Length: 274
Image (cartoon, rainbow, N blue to C red; front, side):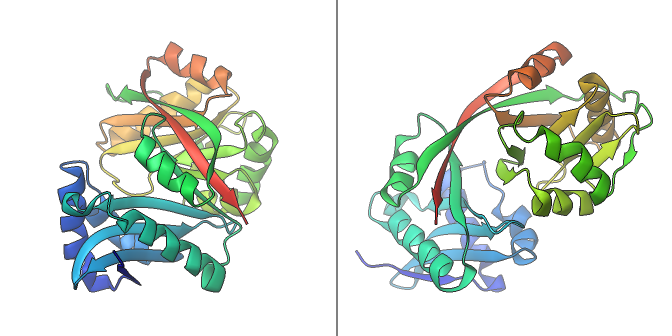
């Protein structure tokens, strides 16, 4: 079956949300993220059969030029019929002709063979294993004097820890390489906070702002950084703090477990470098 795939117009949200709802039930976020998609570089893709929207996906271009493929959804009545392939082909076409990404990455669960197999078909291979832990916010904590760190300070704090973090920081299951363009972007969005004594935390939300607060990095005294993150979540009435990290970072994992975080998921990232 040949499908028509186009870059969405802003007015396509209602149909896109309907596709996601049909495919994912209550696990939906396209409507919440719609304005975010339209205010960041990339393209929201819609696949059609005979004028009916049957699939969606979002291709984000991260500050360092990497491509991130997310929110791939296919209406149940059209699954296993080539819709996902059509969306991948369009994404790769845009990367080659217009967006010129340095790579294309996506995440999935290690047991999601359909998603992993589709990515592999277009040259994406497994490059990172990740773990995710959650903490149920139980009230305010000590802020330990943490204040906002600007991009210059954030670079000084984060870049030396890149290898320890497997070179990646995750925010709402989007993986950013720990490099100058990405750290500066996160700092500009007020993700970095420091106590001025060597401890810091990278914490914030990408979208779904009221559901989870995401810890991407910690440095120095981890417990102080986690206290600040939990306090920030409590102040924002966010019920859960989540940390997703490369599995090589056993030091961070032990700190999270010691604090009271609970294991939530194993994940993998697949990537193709151009």
